[in-house]
Image (cartoon, rainbow, N blue to C red; front, side, top):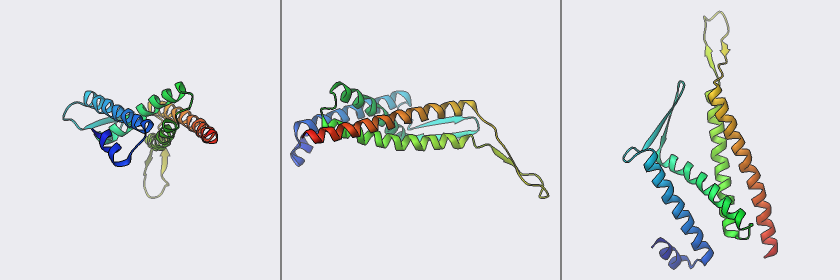
Length: 169
């Protein structure tokens, strides 16, 4: 129904319609996963890491999962198609750029958890910063940073392949 309406309004070609169907299917799978993981009627996720408490709304969870699922599915599709489908290449480029932005914000947030705390003694002495490193957050931050490096490499390859595809056309 949605594809028919979009087709009727914009007269899209067959390739773009196929990509809309893929994105719609991924969105449906993502919505189903959120309902399965978070639960029906519970529209948020609470994460407690040591003394930090993070609450993610269902929309934030949906967006994070959607970008990650799209990244892997489109990366697999583009690799199997050997970068011949320019529409899929451009969608992967947009998804990867968005995911890099979200991942960099995540790295900054996780890094801020480990900043330590300040003791304020009497006014006659200066404050002392006590660093308390959490190994769990440092490990999570390392893996998220490695994931971001992979995303940057994929973004670079996609840019080159899109450029080669435009050169051929």
